[in-house]
Image (cartoon, rainbow, N blue to C red; front, side, top):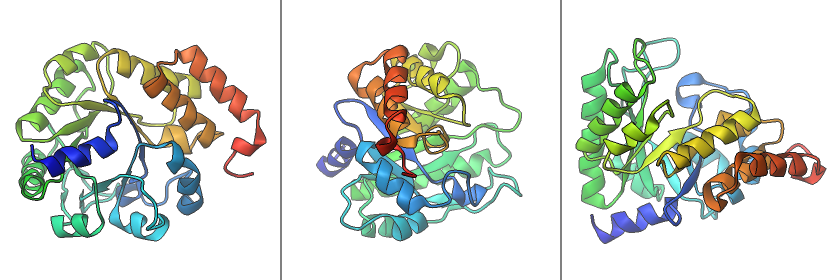
Length: 265
């Protein structure tokens, strides 16, 4: 890998670990609960995030250009929740990513989905462009409608992403996740998924690290939490400070009791 590509990777992965905040949901979901006022939300959460997964539209309209938060730019899209989600194309070119000073670019692959081939070709194209300009690529393993989130399927999807040249892959946690890690030669980041109770989300982060992932890319389990700032700090404790689940949840409760840690205060 080139010096520039390695340098950009080092911006988003700190000491081998990462707490990434995902706020790109709107590109297919539209308005999302918890993201009604993204500018205020992100201003409060960015200080405790290692990187931000975001679309160019939200980046331009919500993030201060003076911010030094590393950007993982969503470059795929084209369908909404009303249509077949796997029918994505590349919607943001590499020149735009460079203009926006992205630290990495990302697209989804739908292994087992109706448009599997198209999504894999999309990934290959942005890997080629990323290598040309020194920008790393994070592949997101979206799940086909009829596919189970098990080690066999996720292991397949992650390995395909690695073989096509992705530098990092984001996927779901599952039972026997060590087998997924064993078969994937690139770093793995765990998706937070749908909102679950705070302690369960912290357990997910803990299990992910213990099983060999380098961190998490959480969105709804942070910005839909009763106290998003407290939650991201607790997640950070697990990922970067080796907190146990109990220690992290204790921190969450302590910060939640402090009104100054609430975004809405």
